[in-house]
Length: 118
Length: 115
Image (tube, rainbow over all chains, first blue to last red; front, side):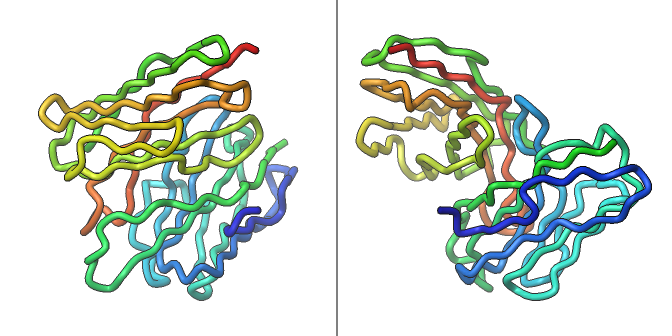
């Protein structure tokens, strides 16, 4: 069982569609991440939220729009995607304290959403 | 930024043998080095990690060693089993501060353990 839950597991969408990916965790983690992973490649960081604020955007195209409604939820809104955006989209979370006293905390990944853009 | 190199890209071993995967990093400020195992169609799972104040860490059949001077770290799996077959990713991070959990991944090693 994973502690980070992602829905849907699979998604097929056309290039004109609008869809959203959802991620939820109840571990009290205050950092949440979106990664994109192509087959046989390492995960690529897209966005990082820390305390519900967007902290890192790795120059991701605007057709990907992240949202963090509260400390447990993370969404990724998709619009006008291209076939090359087809990939596994992974959500992750990690613990974070306000004074950064803990140093780095391990990432907990969800099972991902397998996205196919037609 | 950080650059993490991982070798080999593929590794085949007989069940019961040992497997070693090596990674190098470029940024001497990196201080956290996790290893992830990803089985086919599944999520990456942390199997072991090491911080820069430690030279070696062991958890049953898995061990990681770190050489800060040479900027390299290695994953050692002993008594391999077919269920160890997966892609293994090493990663490096500076940990705290403005990096906010940014992990720099190696390109991965496909480990196959033959029965």
